[in-house]
Length: 396
Image 1 (cartoon, rainbow, N blue to C red):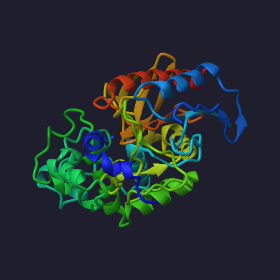
Image 2 (cartoon, rainbow, N blue to C red; image 1 turned 45 degrees about the horizontal axis):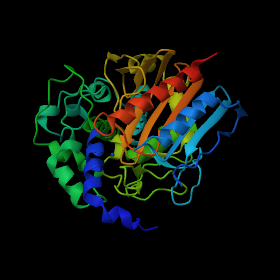
Image 3 (tube, rainbow, N blue to C red; image 1 turned 135 degrees about the vertical axis):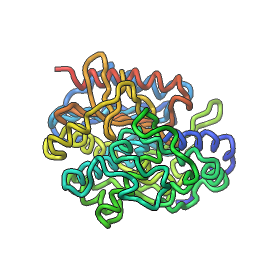
C-alpha cells in the first residue's frame, strides 16, 4: 500500500522530529475496553484502564495504547484509543509494531547465547573480531558494547547520516556499513570509563556475532531467539513497509491532526540497534525469557548480564530508578524491581520488562514517540503510568 499523501505534504517540520528521535534510538477519542488474551484471563483493573484512557485524551498524546500484563499463565490486555485513526480499529495483541531500541535486547540475546556456546567471549575485542574497523576502536570489548561503555561515536548522530535521511527517509542503507559514518572518529572516551548510550554499540555487537559464526545476523536471530521462543510474528526488515495488521504510529502535534508516519522511515538505517518489528504478544514472550527465563541463559552468563551500572538509563528512561546491564536495564520502582528495555522511534514508544524469574511480564506500547528530547512532559506522564502497571504486575 503506498504511503499516505500527508506524509509527503508535511515532511520537513515533521521529519526534523523523526530524525531527532532516530538519533536518540522519532475517531481519536474512541476508547476500547480491555480484552482478554490467550491463557487464563484475569479481571481488568478499572484504575489502570482509566490511566490509559487519560493518556489517549492528553493533548499531543498517543492515538493508541496497548499493555499486556502477564502473571504465570494469566494474561490481561489493556488498550485504549485506536490502532488506526482512519478505520477506528482497536489495538490488538497480535498487531505488528516497531519495537525501536528494544531491538538492542535481541542483539544482546544473540551475543550472550553465543557466549554460552563458547562462540564469543565477553572480553573479545573489536580488534580480534572486527579488525577492519578503525584501529582506535580495537580495544573495545563485547562487554563494553553491550553495557554502552564502549565510547564508540554514535553513527546515527553523524551529520552525513542525518542528511541522507532528510533527503530520503526511506533510503536503503547497507546495514553492515553503518559504522562507516563515524569511522574517521576516535572514541568519545576511554573504553569502560563511562556510560553513554550509543546506537553504534549494537551494530558492532551484531557484526561481532556474524564474524564469530560466519552466519548473517538475521539467521542468528531466527536460530537463537525466534525459534526457541516461538516468536512467529517477529522479524528484522530492511525496508519501510510494515507487516499487516499493524499498530499505526503517529506524529501528534496539535492543532494538526495526527500524521501517520508508520512507514516514513526504512529499517535498514537502524538494523540491529532498532529495526525489529514484533507484536505485543511476541514481545511479552521474549522479555520473559530475556529477563529471567531459566533455560535461556546459563547461570554464569545471567550473572554477567545483571552486573549493573547505577544510574545508566535506557532511552527513553523507564519507570523508577534505572541501571544498565548487558543489553538489559533494571527498573527499581516504589513497588519492586523489574528488568527489561525501552525504545522510541518515530511513531512508537516501547517498554518491556519482567521479573527476575521471568514469571511476570509487562509490555507497554504507545503509538507516538516520546523521549527526553521529544515531548518530555508526555514521557513523564507515561513513566508514571508504567510504574503503576509495574505495581499491578508485582502485586500478590
